[in-house]
Amino acid sequence: MLRAQVGDREAIEALLRSAQPLLTRYVRAIVGVADAEDVTQDVMVLIYRKLWMLTTPDLWRPWMYRIASRSAFHYLKKRRRWPDHLRDDEVLEELPAQDLAAISPRVDDLLQDPRVTPASRAVLALHFKEEMTLAEVAAVLNVPLGTVKSRLAYGLATLRRQRAGETND
Image (cartoon, rainbow, N blue to C red; front, side, top):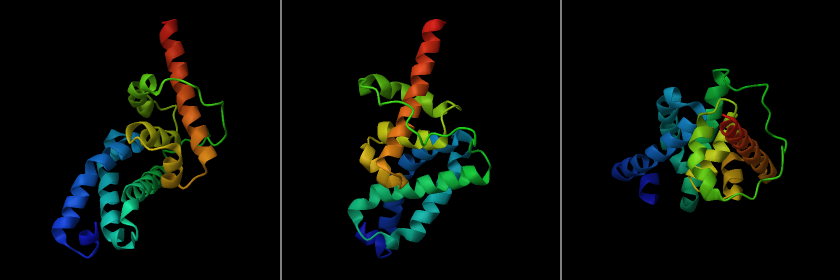
């Protein structure tokens, strides 16, 4: 990290090469497969340009995800693909006491579900796919912990509705 910050080209390339697959997977969860490559490229350029601003190398991971989150949300707003009618900043219900191992395999389905807002997809991807704590997710997205919990609850409520639909089939 330090070598990259002082302009060592090999260190910069290695750092960006290691980050790209993680960021691509995360951005894909928010904006969709079709637009993920373009947004990820923008993220990589921003990271390259702003690398000197990172004062604490230990914060690299949350810092790069914050840049990716902001870029993905900006992209969706610019394309007017952010659903205005869906709000998930209110707690819909208490977080269920479910076994996370049972939820994790279904997260991929939720990340593709158009009923789940981009904000909830970001929380689900960071928490389940990138294995961040809810506090870390809140820091990355720069939102209160309660908002993260409500967005997670919204996504999990959608999962429960999916399951209910499957049992009715």
